[in-house]
Image (tube, rainbow, N blue to C red):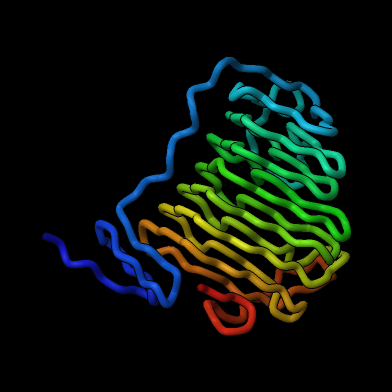
Amino acid sequence: MSIPSIRNGIIVGATVLALGAAGIVGAHLAAADPPPATGQTTLTQTMAVSGNFDGGNRRFIGGGDLGDGGQSEGQDPLFRLAAGATLQNVIIGAPAADGVHCQATCTLRNVFWEDVGEDAATFRGSGATVVVDGGGAFNAEDKVFQDNRAGGGSVTIRNFEVENFGKLYRSCGNCSTQARRDVVLSNITASDGDVLVGININFGDTARLSGITVNGDIGICDLFEGNDSGDEPEKVGEGPNSTNCILS
């Protein structure tokens, strides 16, 4: 029987062990696979979504200008969601372009990214409330969720699984418009990643995490000094702490 180890307050290598005070579980659990695709559609231009779009577990991939599969910044997304839109039961395959863009308040429900492109999803808008409920993301070289909102509202990520990633969530560290951004993560299973959250403490960002399951030595929060000049933000610490990165 192997003996679990504790690194940075996270139990690693346990079958199922909970660290109640920190809200962390360490387990040999891999992220769930996406459901079987019911078909496949190639998008050669961004699909605009308003209202509710239910993909019925169909796989969508990029083609043409959306099909280079690169990591370069500034790519167009496969889906662009208008204010109040919901995208659900969609599998995003490869190439994925820049995934999903939410222009304002949006809901992503049971969306799976098989091979994240530039980012899985980017959030924009002032006062936008974003909910990611269910689904999963795999093979994100850098970020999964990029938060460029201009303040107000919140991001909630729950019942989500992520595997082989850089950061699950990043509050923009060098956007020209900066503000406090708040994120809540609950019931997250993470495997083979670097860190769950990157936030800017000088702008008052907060991350609240609960029900976190990790497989591997994954950090909880990287704390940055953000800017609005476009310069690379400076990492100034790590969490959790009692102010910006809170585990319960």
